[in-house]
Image (cartoon, rainbow, N blue to C red; front, side, top):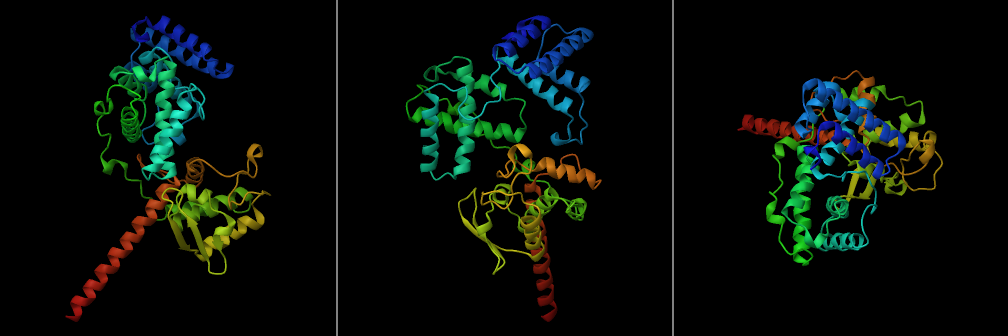
Length: 383
């Protein structure tokens, strides 16, 4: 592909592709500057052809990241350089940029959109939870965008197209790659069963499962969650909101999506309970509402929550989306409080709300084991 060109010509072709795709002026300027710096680095190193391995070497030399830094701690320059190299790798492998950020069905042809709707319905018919089905359809959507970018007809795809797509996603984390492989395998199975492709390409892909032990969510060390709660400024509206959200994660173990989707009418103040349906599983759950969590929610509703007609307890405070439902992972917010609390994280420490949910589960399990051991020891003494 494009990596056969001399690196100077390769860089010019990359910038021309950015122009063709009508990237914003500021973004184009930034990526051009990074690609020019790549050429300068190649000249110093005596390299005349681009490769993915050389791109990694360039990043480590010119835009290094400490091993104990998580992505949310990267500087803007570090994030932009990695995004630029991701696009450069994509262009090197495929001859075009296929990984451009697009939302909804942008970038899809008229045939793809109804196909995705049928696929999502197929997953629903198999009993998949709505969000699980959406996640699998998201990978299918990325694959179709990739094919459309190459102007490759779906009915004529071959093994080389699947391999090229996987190469374009090679910069993802291991767990993400596993998800991509598994979801793509399911989609290829569907395409073949519906006779939309002539060859069964699913067996080309491995099972896609990673070592489960490598994906266990980090557990917070004793006292660190209390330190985070202690530095939150509860004198301002955002602080009141964040304090209540983190308490819900640490005390009740609710998923982020369920916290953000919590409605005021799901809180039974008379019985001090939360009754809701889990977004992921669709199963109803009922939680006792601890007193400190209840008071934190009341404090936010009375003195922090901006006016909004939406039923959700927690809403956005930014001017552009004031009063709208929260979305995202909340990880950057937690990292902010980690820094304020001067907590030193381990290299692999995760900081999302899900890690707090997992910490609660581990603590409950530890308490259960401790109680069993005490009862067992007590029964032994009686005998």
